[in-house]
Every structure is written in C-alpha cells, then in structure tokens.
Length: 275
Image (cartoon, rainbow, N blue to C red; front, side, top):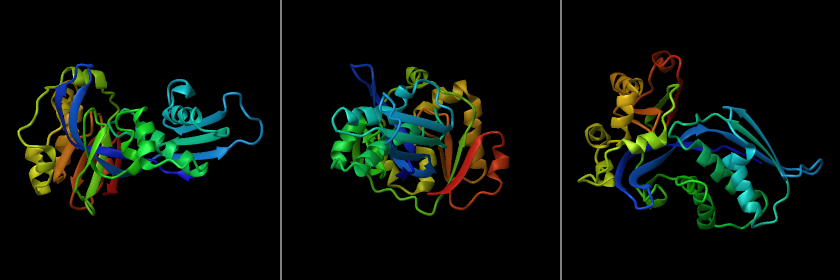
C-alpha cells in the first residue's frame, strides 16, 4: 500500500505565552501543501526480522537509529495495542527536514492512517489523532489534513475558513539549520491585539502588513540569508511571504506562476506548486 504524506506551511505564528511546563502556547494556521514524501507498507511473510519490521529510507538521509524514525515509532505504538503483523516500510523523503514543513510528523500520521486501513483496525479519526499527538504536537493535524487554526502547543485545532485555491506557492529552503530551541529562547512572547483568524479573514493583500511569524525577528537577525529570501519573494511579486514555523524554509504566495524560480534561488531547495 502506497501513500503520499504531504507537507504543511504555517500562515502566521504568534507565540503568546510561556507555560509552567517550559513549553510555549502559540497561535498559528496549518495549511496543507502539495509537497510529498512516499511511504510503502507491505506485510513481511518470509525471513521475518526479530524486531518485527524493516525500514528502508531513500532521498534525504535520516541520521540516527531506525527506532528513532517517526514512522517506526508510529508502527511500534500501534503494535503495542493491536495485533499487527511484521511489516516492511519504504520511505522516500522529498520534504526537506528541519524546514518547518512538518515532514516527519506527516510521515508518522500517514503511517498510522495506512496501518489502520491496511490491517482493518477500525480506528476513528479522533483515535488516530490521539495516537498521533503522542509523537508530536503538529502530528495530529495530518490525520484530517485540512486547514486549521492551531492553539495550545500546536495541538488544539479549530476549523478555519481559508481558501488559497488557484494561488501559486513558491517554497525555498536554504542549506541552513535553525535550532527550534534557539528560536524559542529568543522569541518575543506576546499576545497580539487582533486574533490571527480575524486578520486572515481580510483580503490577502493586507496580510503583508498584519500577519507575522514571531520567530522571524530572532531567526533573521542570526541568519540574514533567510530574510533575504523573503525579501526576494516580494521583489518577485508575492502577495504574501513568510518563514514557515521556526524555519528555515520560506514561502511566497503569488497570483500567477513565477518564471525562472530555480535560477532566482540557485543552490537552494526550491519548488513551485499550485495551492
């Protein structure tokens, strides 16, 4: 069984308060985009490994033990509660890691959905979201995979009416790693006067001046190259541009396709998609 886990972007991101447990409450919109990994899950019938699974990763190299990979953690989590057979999992990574795009979270959520369907576990969306949330704050978003206004630590979802259909997305990730821990350590915690859903209900042309990502100030001061990507998006005619999550990817939303984007962002991961 083959599935195609997709990425997401954050449209606006406000870090509104620090919690007693050391985490931060935030407000953001998760919006799914057409940039995909590939996962194939097959039952193993011969030469069954002692651990009960095989994992093969292609594309972006995953540093660390297979047990640390979110797709394997998802499999082992369900196997602890259900009689799952040994499986072979092939994962082709196309979504960049460390980009604020949720690629690992999406892979885990799609693994849960695929195991549920393939082996007839009968899990509801709510139950799959519950399992996914154990693996990461934004993981549960990818179960239903629809735009949401997210609060809490990014794990409480509210429906939002936002439609960017027929807009063009240009997504760029430079070869820069942004530490989420460092981004949070330097962020200015505050609650905005207007709520994010209220701001996003206005015409998209107004977002440039009102919809912000609170991580940009600290990240851009350390990595001006990322700020330069956002500036170039506007130079190319973006109606809105922003860093996604805590970086390091930057996206621009355009009314029309952009010519020669690979040349404009030479040497960087760059993709153009219709939203």
